[in-house]
Length: 488
Image (cartoon, rainbow, N blue to C red; front, top):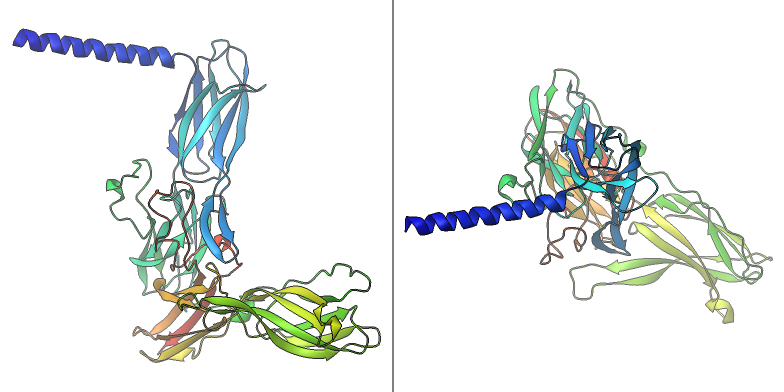
């Protein structure tokens, strides 16, 4: 019995030795190593290569991707990420076929990247190795009075399914999520200090649907990636800061550039191609029949996502005008109270054979926030927050609301043609309180790198939660808005 066990053990050892020997034989040649094997953006890293041809030039190539949000019309479809690469450096091997160089981790997406060593003159990969860009969080300043802007910078955010969302928490309350799809893996956001004097804890936690609190037991867990990134802000005694006037937070209108009109055909142009509800707009028409009635129509979308009838594109009368003896007109109107996003303005003869000849121009309605009302309240008093120009697409019909850096909920503007009226109740704590409105994604499909085969639409980190890095918002250009009120 013992003899048989010893024989089996000897056979197993021989087999293992054969496997190791074969692997060693296959791996003979060039090798590439890093010290450290992973680090945050900006870290200096030593790369060593051995087994190279002597006195030859090599390029160290960093593999990555160029992700972008996939938005098609009103629909959100997640992320696309074509591959990309960049050469970090070029160096020459020694007479012994070795190479030691130093590079700085580039500002890029977090998690694993393939790094390759190529002959500088071109050719197949000589050696390659994985390097992990580790997510990293910084905060400044470290202290200040209530309302102090706190700038949070997170680098090394990923772009794959389980890596693209990190959730920011302020004293344990979820503030919103951080992403860097269009900002190259970096999110730079500003929140306002809120609460009593003393230390307040900020945490960033990875997680698709929400903060993943036991990430170390996840099938996607990577030991080199931190589970929680944290910082502390100290509120010191002092006057609480006010919010900037809402007029200073609004988007700027885009000035129109009018292409030349074809002779003898109806033509329409505007002085601005965008504006908030109520903003003045000048329409100029030419090429129409002289001294004739011209109908001006506004194209919009009417409906919602919940009813069986859905939604449809409609034209509604805007106004009428009479062309002059040369077939031209100038008309001053106000931007209609309607859904945010792109619309068309259409001009045509009000009647007769020429009514089918149309001139159109594109115009977009921008979101706009009104001042908070009232700005001084008692505990429990209703507070009104009003926005106009909210859109109808999956990326443009929703704003989310934080109160003192804690997420309260969302508001949708599709069914109300872009008008959003929110009422909250003042909290009990006496003093200044802060309301922040962030864009988000209402719904859609999450397709893209690393998406599990059984997932195509889930309510999670992408949907209905504050998107703190407003620069990264897909689709419409939507800003973050900031308000303040006092409880006395």
